[in-house]
Length: 164
Image (cartoon, rainbow, N blue to C red; front, side):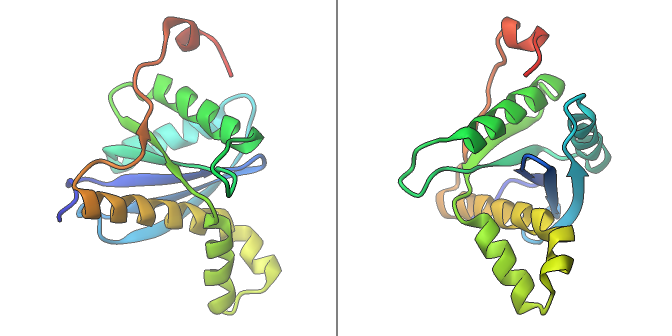
């Protein structure tokens, strides 16, 4: 099947950094894009919003780090919170959460295969994890014909005015 036309951003939310990747217009090629430092004052969110606007992205796919058994912990709550905060800033853009179990392991594996040292990997592993997340989301869309993940729909009035 064919995926919807339009550039998407993949996002890997961490406690220190946010990895970002982008797809091409056809949703075939996914490339690492940028590592954004986490910032409690919202600079990280502003940078992601700027990237969405710069690339005219139709969707932001955020990795949801579930436990191997499928449960959610603190990292998943952080990803959901980041997604809601991003949706408040991008009400017309589809923002969704996708299962990202083992994406960081896959990213490290790719970088090790490419011959990068641990120090070199540290600089870009978050971007490559975002790449893995977005590739998996696009593969899901090709397989099912449906947009991937769990969409973050409306943000309640309480959430719209609050901070997370």
